Image 1 (cartoon, rainbow, N blue to C red):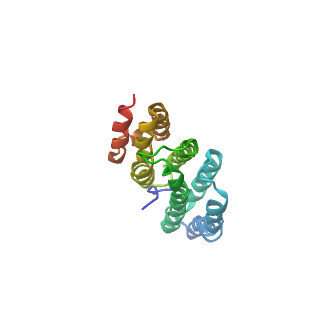
Image 2 (image 1 turned 90 degrees about the vertical axis):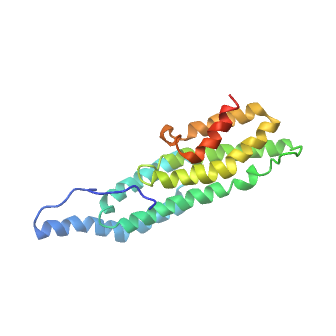
Length: 201
């Protein structure tokens, strides 16, 4: 799944039937009314590239998930799926700009500037993705930011950039490394990037 495992989200109710009904009332309201509103917020209002917007979205999800993780895990999975889809779509926006810098070409100044701008945006997305790791499965976030984004998009850009401007490649590599939580540095998918970065220091 794409969500962090739950269990014991709010604590069990008492033994009486009325207590059990009351315990189920809030999750039912949350599931039927609030979930659709949260999905709308994630799809229409949340900006995956904004630190402030991401902090608010994470807080909103944490407030909601605590009520439904045990009673409606499928609803939580659906919300986490919305998060992953938003990040994936946001990263896709920068594939084109990052591909403007071609090895062997004599790139224009615009190609450098657009490429570095797109790289910076991707680093912001990586940082914001890490903020979701207490709600969304860290493995899913790592697969998106490392296996897909870094290995397939950002590392090839850095390798090409190194041939034109080694200092810029080193600076951007450091920015990307700092965007990942330290505990993610052991993931196999990031090791080629770490090996590349070590050649620049």
